[in-house]
Structures are given as C-alpha cells and as structure tokens.
Image (cartoon, rainbow, N blue to C red; front, top):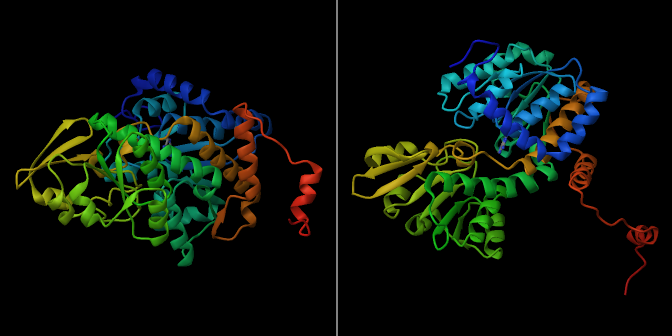
Length: 421
Ligand code: ADE
C-alpha cells in the first residue's frame, strides 16, 4: 500500500496509465465538460469541503476534477471493496487529491478509508450506497452539524436514507440523485445492462446466444440487463416478488417464474434486486453442472456465499473473478466476483456516456445544496423537474443532437380542452 502522501492507494506508479483512462472518459462526458467550463468562471463550490464515497473509476475522476474546478476541496474513498480502478486512484493521488481506495480491500480497510475522508470535516457529502453518511450518523455525529447536505447516487442508498428519514434519524438533507429521470432511465437501464454483460464476459468469455439467462429483479437495472442479454441471443427468464414489474416483464416478452423453478433451468444467474438471500442453498442444490452465478446489485448479500461454501468441498479461482465451487455431489458451480457487483468488480462499470448524466446530476445537486441547503429540513429531496429537463437538453446539445420546438399554435392546443374530433 502506498501511503507516502495524503493518500492511500495500491501503487502510485500506476498514475500514468490511470491518466490515460481518465483522458478517454473526459472525451466522452460532454455535459460534465460544459458544466466544468462554467464552474471554472463561477466557482459555485468555493469554500466547500466534499467527502465522497463512490466507486473510484475513470468517470468518477472526471467528476472529482469538476468539483475541484468549481472550488471544492475533496476527500474520497471507494464505495465497494472490489470496485476501485487502482491506476485511476493513483492518478488522482498524483494530481494532489486526497484519495483513499484500492481494489480488494477487506471490511476494515474499507471503513478506515471512509474515516480518513471524514478528517476533512466536510460541508457536503456524496454517497453511493449510504455507507459514508451512515458512518457520520453512527460514529461521527459531531460532524453532522457542519454538514449542509448530501447526495446519494444509487437505489439501495436512497432506500436506506428514506428509511432513516422515516425513522426521524436523518441529521441533514440529502438529494436523491438516483431518482432523477436523467439518471435512472439511462444509468440504471443502459449502464447496468451493458456493464453487467461486460463483467460476465470478462470473467467467463461464454457465448450468451442460446443460454438460459436468469435475471432476478425487474427494476430498472434488471430490465436493462434482461434486454441486453436477450439482444445477445440468450433465453431470458425473470424472477420477481412485485406483481407490477413481474407483469411488465411478462409483457416485455420474458418468461417469469419463481427462483425455485428458474434455478433448475439457468445457465447464468444474475441478481439485481437490492434484497438479501435471493439465491440460497436450495437453489444451488438444483442448479445444473457448470451454472454461473453473479450479482449486479449494490451489496454482496443477494447470493448466499455461506450456503455455497457449506454445500461445496473445494473452491479455486479458475479465471480472474471466476471461482469454481466443487459441490459435494460432484457438480461445479461458478461464482463471479465473490458475489459483489460484477459490472465494477470484473469490468469498468457503466460507460462514460451514461455516467456523464449521472455525474452532471451529482454536480448540480451539490451546487444546489451549497447555495440553498441551509434552508432545507433533514429529509430526502428529489432532483427538480427543471434540472432533469435542462440536463437532458444539455446532453443532447453537447452531443450535437437537435430536436423540434412546439409552435405557438401547438402550445395553445395543449391548453385548449375544447378541441376534439
Ligand atoms: N457506477 C456504475 N458504473 C460506474 C462508473 N463507471 N463510475 C462510477 N460509478 C459507477
């Protein structure tokens, strides 16, 4: 571990390689670039200290440099033990950022890194999964009085924060970036769909065409994954617990069934539910020899590794992020990325083009908190519909796409309830 500066990274010598990756990401994030240009002039985050806890990837590096260009001081940790891109972390450290993250942390290392970022005494926090904010609430409550507000990137984190707010436990306002249409309708669907397939292929290189691919959960992430898997020729089966997404999956043309039944059919299983114990012992018991199991939800609780270990007699890594469990009855089952989010642990996470929108939302939400957060109560706020529309326009404009505008007559027509057949 390299701790020779105000950072904790795996190897500072990887900085050049990381810098080239960041350059690539920057060239594909035009909305954030436009916001950065403006921020350099206006410095909307001047004087703010931001502690961030979000996957350290090339796209996150572009967010970090944008926050810094707006005047903020930054301290950052990863939000998952298996998602940090070590070369990117090294580049950030070499640029002088206080960065504390490496790939393959244990739980202690993970929380130590979050705690290091809190030494900054932040005025704003940024989370992906709510671990940093929960740390403030459970271990560093004194810091909360100096924090104007926070933002949350992901569905799981927003659930946690709404539960904290409902219990009257939330100590400062949080903006649910995840719930912006320009976030979930792109990042969760297109980002998760593509990056999860990418992670599975890097760990297995299997042919998807003709395989039975079981997707657990038909939220936005599950929908994106199911659609992409079908696009590559897989026979997709969806499992659900909620009748509405289950019905959507049926009408989107997927077979929907209980996991108990799907377990017997699947060649590849991927959980995208945000719920624990989705694939457990009895499912492993009925899986086919050679079945591949992974997760793309935020936490590693969706697939029961304890059950897999209990039912197996040997485990060995046969490829990077691909462990073969020899079951006591002679079958072999494969677990990818230790049940952690396969799209970041075994690939590079969502492509830059979608993270552009997610992180432009993050940036704008933090600017909003910096200017108005003091007037907010300690609850969970949405991104405003105006921000959503403006950002969609900015993304189109910066991508060179033009759209039509309503004529004056069409605008009148919208409010004219007398016009019928
Ligand atoms: N979450 C999913 N993909 C990501 C990426 N590329 N960077 C940061 N967070 C992510």
